[in-house]
Amino acid sequence: MRESQSEIHSVRTDLEPASVIETPAGRKLASLTGSHPEGPTESESRKWLKWSEKELKQAQWARDALENDRVGRKGLPALGEATLSFVSFHGYVTQGKWRKAYLALEKAEIGVSLASETVCGRP
Image 1 (cartoon, rainbow, N blue to C red):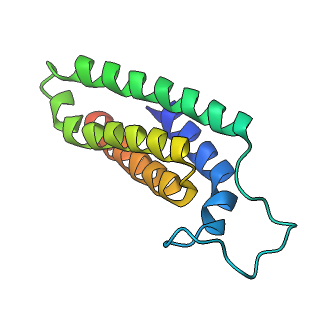
Image 2 (image 1 turned 90 degrees about the vertical axis):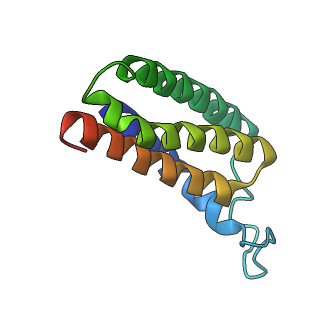
Image 3 (image 1 turned 180 degrees about the vertical axis):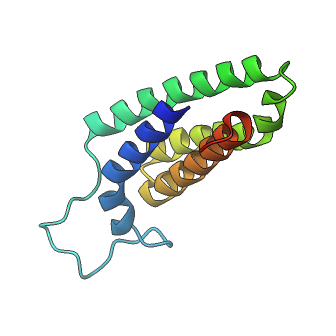
């Protein structure tokens, strides 16, 4: 799970510049000039979509493995939230909603960290 946390943080760092371009209403900030990026490239978006699919599979594998473990079962709710956040992230990237994608990754990172802390005793 620690590898997932590191990867989530890395993708969030890559996505952060695009997430601040978009206001909550989905409008572009008038003060931005052409020197700011309009958002991730298509190649970056595809890379993130593949990455989120991989993370979703790993999270589901972990859920299946922990389901029958007495201690591990306690981490299932947090891991479930992280799994849903990966699905949301995938959808938001597909739609080009960078701010929401960034926030979904924040939730996934929290869920993975909480699950790891619950199951392993450390974040």
